Length: 475
Image 1 (cartoon, helix red, strand yellow):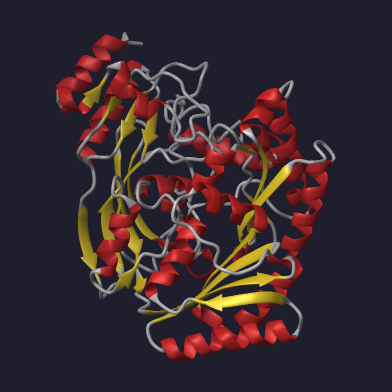
Image 2: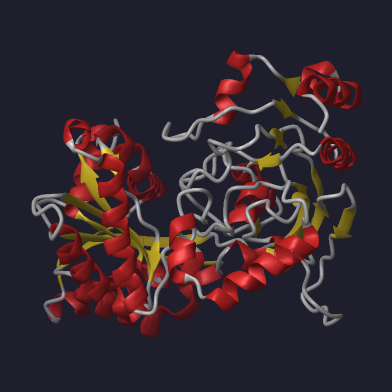
């Protein structure tokens, strides 16, 4: 293995000195996760500006035997994009300088972009040609496309459009030896063997570095109808979801659930947020319909469905957004949950998914399970109910957390209790956040030997020296 100074000098010669960060102050923003729970050292941060430069960085690191950590916007919730403690210091390869939108083909419904593009910029570029890139999440103003692919990000539109992997047509990837694989096809149908791009989506940078992607675009909805309502409980919310699916079909774009405690935290900790409804309600749902036409008929569908739900005793109150500003305000409440929870205390965020029909049972059983450990623990719930993904979050004040005899042990026990419930119901411990570092024990616990062996076989074939993002995804 070369010494670090030699590798840094070679990287600077390849990329330019300004594209290689080595000083402690400059490294800080890259070696710590955004929730400030994980931090470890890196040899340097390399910022290539092209696929050829990424390949050159990989070849130099491979020759030196130095680990490579691909990084996007560093918004991972499972420490997947920062160095792992106790391991050799990696070279962080951040793609922030690779932000070109190479090609937009509105007629084909596709867009080719570099991996460093911020998600919001991609959404805006699609909208400029009356198309929609539908992946939407709270971090969309800072997360990068390459990161969303590497984690198979979900978000608030999965109900209608699917996860990230459902919206990718092709990839360009730098492999562990510096080889560039160009699979930037823009086809809906290609039956010529194994769909190689799917190997890299959700692999968290352990098999290759995604440098560019061909995304699938959809017709841009120009009309929306949105309501905020208070179901009597999660079981009622599930029944109302079925009513909307039967009545509105593909117009149903979002169905987001949260409990009263989550809403209270948003109002308390994020300036400018307001309660959508009068009165104190235990449960809340944001529901949205979207289409390319027919805003009046959508609003009527929305109102009539809610009225039938009220007549059936399934909801206590509801309000429809009557303007674009009010619609945006409702969505701001929903997208503020992470910020609010970070300010409120230490949240033991879980990322479970269960069959949609099992969501109420999951919430009930998970609540009982964690309160067997701490009877008065605060519970915050927010989830994409339409696709079965529920973020069940035991929340401690900062003082209560630090007062625990062993906070790390308590966190692991509580998460395991919640994940066990999901597993019993046919679910998973990670629906959209990925595995990263924090989910390694869960991978080892819940995945079968056969499944882990298959994953390791693929890893060994593509990265036999384990240089790409070691210490995450695979236990």
